[in-house]
Length: 272
Image (cartoon, rainbow, N blue to C red):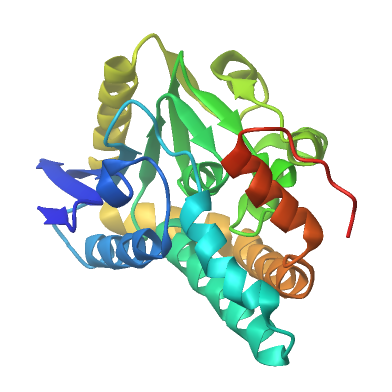
């Protein structure tokens, strides 16, 4: 079963594997990607035949994050607008994208992300919305938003603190540095590292099957209990970040980041 070439779902017993890609099969995220992500996981949530889900990239890479080319087109008209409606429109866009990842995080069934290749920006947001992460040895993670003039606003700043701790999160978010699979395992970002992409996907499927063998009611209860403290904190942080970015995202620094991306050069930020 496919969803407009962005998601392919396969089944093996009670485990569903979701392979994700963006427009044209690219490992990027656009507005349609987020809409289909929410629809896909909402359907999995109500499918009683599915007891666990594996999420992985359709190609060699998990995700390069936001499609910056498409984002530039989205932000341009908002950047030139001076009325409050432009900020309100941006706030609604951010909240919609956050909501799509909330559907993944709120799935009442265990989720395992099999991360291979690059996992950047929104890719990290998506991976950390899953319960467990497994990586191949070639996986590279980056909370890259600071390098492109954006405060990460889709959940990594809120969810990662409970995964890797405050100090590691601040280092990753404030530098935008790349983290290889060995470092990712060392800080707890991933649970296991496997030699190849195929090995990582197979291990994720095996782990998901072990989870799926348990009582669905108990699995749902475990997730509900674990999220009792986290969910309100994450929601408060997401809402605050959305308001912050709706006020400050449309900046000269964002323009410079987009221009530098097109021109393939390092950006020169001014703080304006």
